[in-house]
Length: 195
Image 1 (cartoon, rainbow, N blue to C red):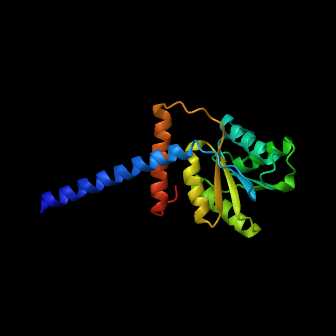
Image 2 (image 1 turned 30 degrees about the horizontal axis):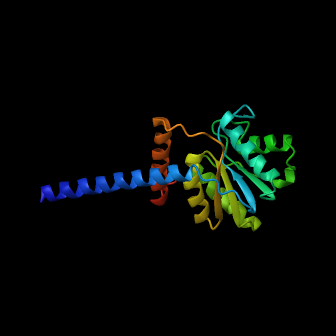
Image 3 (image 1 turned 180 degrees about the vertical axis):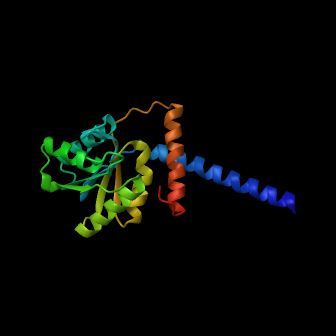
């Protein structure tokens, strides 16, 4: 009986590992697909900000969203992200300010400034969109975020298209780690654990 239990545990671990690897590979594939098209809103996932200035990662995301907005793919841009340890600024507000300085009308920018994780920011963004009657979104982030971000927004009733910020994949172990980490995050979210 003990041996049967051990075999069952081993099979469960192998199944979970296989699921993670397949999901990580799917995330990697989605990280290279740009589905940008006409939508109601462009949703920009937050990233670090430094005393009111976007980090290079956040700036790259915002610049990509700005390009999509200037191509008239959406009437609104929704910036996301909470304080992240900074009591004075939020990622969402820093994103808004950056876009306004580059000519996007303030009334065309919606800010989600409470989320302290990808999941919480996207759930809040989905709720904001539902209240505003916005049904579709182009999601802008780093490629490794796109698969999970789309699924979370779709769970909120939004039709989501991914548009990763420009980035040349290098195939390094660090990139592979990001895909695997997102696979774990996706698996936890599917299990109802919102990190």
